[in-house]
Length: 227
Image (tube, rainbow, N blue to C red; front, side):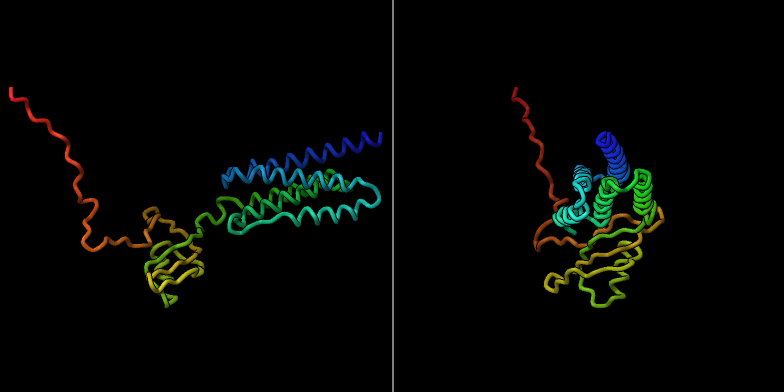
């Protein structure tokens, strides 16, 4: 009877975890970010962590110690590379981890786990809403000049992109006269504002003609027959 009750409780917690992580990945993350390759990673990480926590929590009197060491080992193998995973995606990673922990803990009641899961989903849904800071952008711009004056650089970024909030100079090339800047800016709200600006110039080699002025091949003509 006790084993049947434990199995029913475990199934209820598993169902809660699957519902929560499905809403997070398929209802919030994928419609907003369209990163299909991360959806199975989130689901697998969540369910695997739930299984580890649920198993270690039911091993006996030493379950708490085993649970602590097991979680330390599981979380230590998760590596997030900042160059391929954005900060929003890192937030989804940790939310899937916490959902697996909450739903897998055997001593936590189902109602408490459901309430905490709803809080996590609501917070992430609101914090990553597309209408929140919709006009703020971040991009990398290559400028065809070296700017030693900060005010001149700000004016150039404002002219090309919009009002800059801040920037980081990644590279300054005095040989090619280039400046590579990572900038955070506010997109212009007017309908007539330019959306795309070319930040570099393309020059033709000396003596080369304009490619658009080069005539194409003439169509072949057929001489009339002598008869």
